Amino acid sequence: MILYFSATGNSKYIAETIAKSMNDECMSIVTCINEKRYCFENEKVLGIVSPTYFWRLPRIVATFLENIQMKNCAYTFFVLSYGTTTGSAVHFTEKLMQENNQKFDAYYSVIMPDTWTPMFDLTDQKKVDAKLNEGEQQLQDIIQKIQTNLNGDFVKGKLPVLITVLPSLYMYHTERKTKHLSVNQDICIGCGLCAKKCPVQAIAMKDGYPIWKDKECEMCLGCLHRCPKFAIQYGNGKTNKHGQYRNPNTAI
Image 1: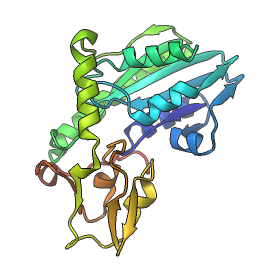
Image 2: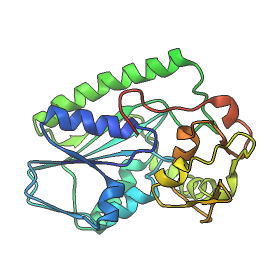
Image 3: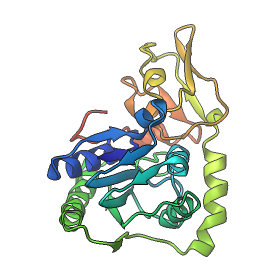
Image 4: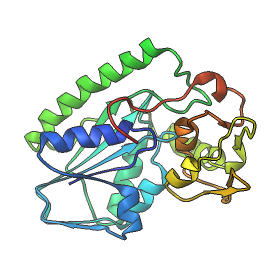
């Protein structure tokens, strides 16, 4: 079983590709949490694929790891998708697993286009395609390692823990405030896709337009990237120039 959290498809595509190579299945972590499914027993392979957020893990993945129980699973692994760096995500994952009396046999990473468009520009298709091609090569390499049940830490793009732990905590706490998100009512068509797809139900529809009813969310930017009219923006004024992104190899 391969589990994943994905807002724009990168981690989902990685999970699907690994699962296909192993003749296995994959499932969204959001589904697991909604169904309160945290215990996995007697799996030949149990893998988790997560994006890297602000040098650490998305809150929803961290919560899942705090509760997961892996019993009598022959081989377990964790894969980080990342755009520029994996930061200290491995450190945070290992700490969470240790506190939960759990342990992964291996850690891997796959580079993908960085979807944090308040900073990164995704309008250059050649650069996006180059990043996807690089990630595909890394993905095929880790599939070979997984198929041989290789143990160890194979994550790339790490940063020193001492200089990332506090900044990452501050950044993620600050940036995931929903006050940063807004909708352009002049172009919003009120389709409700953003509310339907929000992994933590932080969006509701009011008078035909989305509102963020919670003060914080995962800040996965799934609402921004999936909006059919690109009506949702993040408050720094750059996202409307930096484009939208969905992994071209999977549905999300």
